[in-house]
Image (cartoon, rainbow over all chains, first blue to last red; front, side, top):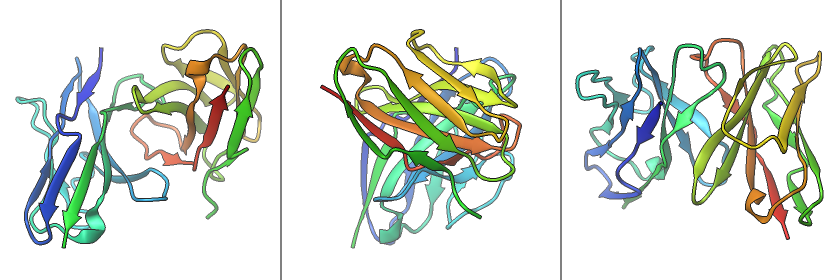
Length: 110
Length: 113
């Protein structure tokens, strides 16, 4: 069974501080991993995915297959980063199915 | 390009009734997925349709069903509503592959009384 765990429901940091949102997964195979974000009063949207290896809005995430983790990092948090972040997984023949973690609410204080 | 649209945005129904929700995907997207979002369970996958065929299904009872039309628009139906069906129902569209980006709609807020 595929499972995604985000251990922190809430995370608070100050502007300019580094931030790391944790994500651990279990999946028997080669997973596709994503981070989705939902800003206040906006719809859920893709932030980044591991296969593209991009840095979006200063965020990066590295897939660590040994530790089965896909933590999201940003060296200097901004107030506009405050949002709900979801780690999600798919793979194999899981057509159209994303398995989401419970989400982490990030608050960046001025 | 226009985003994913869902109608209606809000619904109030009574236990035992049935409800139909609609989703229009982004033009060119042929895959439509449905999710249920609740405070307790988070985001849970309901099912996915591609070219009018259900390709994948989550762990929900048979009261939850869906279909997709030739223009890729999709509907989901919940029969014999229960209080626990109160949730935000999200629709997402993508091109084809599981690894393609999913674009989410604003959701339909269903309240069962």
